[in-house]
Length: 201
Length: 184
Image 1: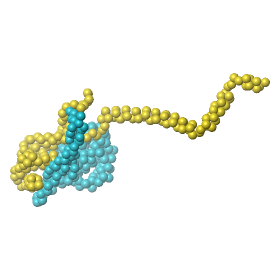
Image 2: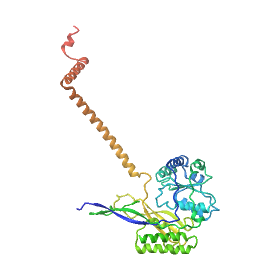
Image 3: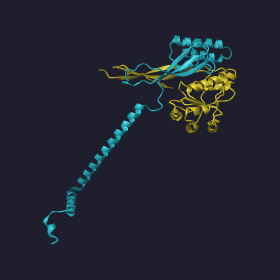
Image 4: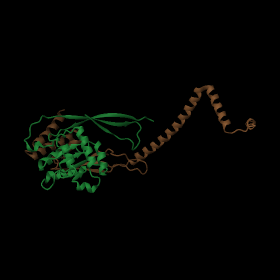
């Protein structure tokens, strides 16, 4: 019988940079920790209290709320701050800076975007009694806002300057990422061989 | 390199002309996607978030795109034990509001936030077995230490201990004749 051999194959993937993309706001680790502790301490524990607290919990719910702010800003109350409980390079939330920036452009008030990272999701989801909580939006009339206001005021709001200003010429940039893909050779068993991709920059 | 530069240029010019002429921007983006398919280049999955591959509309999040995460059933796995169920995967659903085209990007199984019940049960079993093992080890260590002490003391130690035992036996109760005769 042949022994299994794990071979790593590197592939190069093209990365196209969108000039309309907006970078994530910079939040220092100390502020992130304080915000996570504040959320764990003051978030409501039941589903009914979540609704009464003017909170929107969940990635899809926050997406829907921000989209309604972009399309019909008069009838929708824009959140004051949106917490993202995923890593910044996750594909689930890579569009959030632009979405919040568009909401700030079309809406009447300003919304801040705070990335807390995936490590904070476990504690916050456990506090809320949910299996997952990818994003949390807090309105300015929420009882939780008074505890968060001082901490998030220093964070810059994402802005869509390209919507309000004339476009400028940008030099063409080409980027690449190198990924590693594992392949098993030799004896193969059905259902046990899985390929994993790792992204490296 | 020329291919990559051309593709990046098409994306950039599509973004820059969107405010002036959305149709012209769509033309550039459609050209970009057609070239990607023609040249059979591997791209980052995030490329699909730049624009619609069908109508070429540049995605303005919140205005002409609807983004949702949905759960998806995975293929049947043959490596699972009887009664085990595979976890649901996650797909990123991209709805273009211009041409109503829906594109799904599979993202795989999300990372676990909490340990599964099986993992917790296995952990409890491991902890109980480790405590039993530690108790056995401690008893064994006590015996070993006792033997070491006996060896260290030598023959004199053994004799001393024997004398102590004899004294203890005499002090408690004895059936010898001397004990009966002593009061007389």
